[in-house]
Image (cartoon, rainbow, N blue to C red; front, side):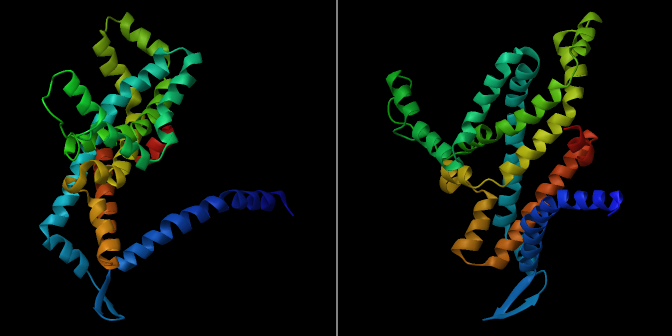
Length: 289
């Protein structure tokens, strides 16, 4: 067999598992969801196809208001994760000694050692009416009785930031670690203040990492289910809860598939707008990371 044929065969065998993974676990399920979203029930075992499920969605303000609320809170969580994660990433990449970087990175990984369910219940133990924070505030005399800190938007945002901040730190560390320290030194030598160096050298260099981290965090937050439901309770109003309700509670797979398609489309639109505003492209961001 010629070497060119062997090379092509090796390349096919190398990428075949990845192609199967993409096709079987991502492409085919999305096609199936899209197919279900276009199916309309006429009666027992009778179906037709059209866009009535999408029309019903936009006719019901509760549904699209929940989608907009989920998108807005996901953006807010992404911004807060960036504000929390950037200083941590900068310290790990540019300030900490190389020997301690692994330990610091390991500390950031600790929350991922347990599931989202366990982490959410941990916040419940801390913030519930009889939790540790409430008892501490009573002991210090700051409140006169038990105080409920759960089931509000602030708690949901805190829980989500805690859950996703690592996915902001990792691409930022990867990007900032490749920045030559001489760039920062040159900025100081030219008379730049710390803020000027940070604004005109560090941030522009870190833009690919910021964009990559924001995309990952936003998509994870918008698709989150356990944390908003457990920490927000009945007041959570999260769109994934609507999807779960359609699929499991009402057993209306057509509406659930419609909601899933709309969530994917809307989050993809937000990501595209973010890339346009920052002047980045998805391909260049992935390539730089």
